[in-house]
Image 1 (cartoon, one colour):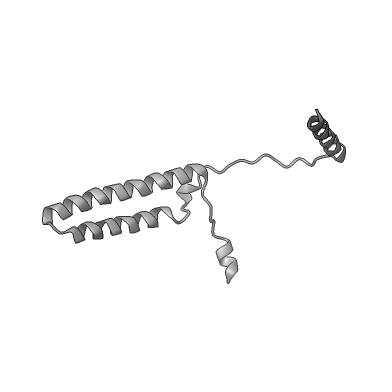
Image 2 (cartoon, helix red, strand yellow):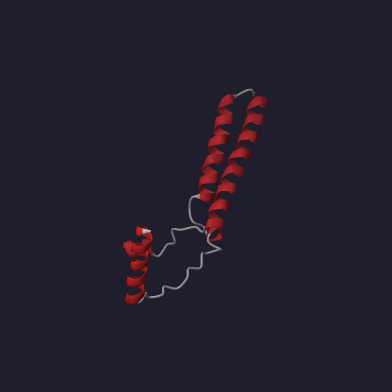
Length: 101
């Protein structure tokens, strides 16, 4: 049963995180402005709060799950190069020499 959950991606790349943050802030800002104006017109502060909560819910649904639009720019990692034992010993000797200078 849990193997199904392991197949779902759970990450975003850096550009995706930036996009999610911009969408989140934009939706919150728009809902705040709309809620304030609507609440001012009908003179009911409660509707301002309801519209803000609706905007918050919509922004959470748009930005919290790792949708594919947030994974378009994956990082390319350098391949692992095995380190030779002689090289490691030489680098450790160089570090010891630098410490004593």
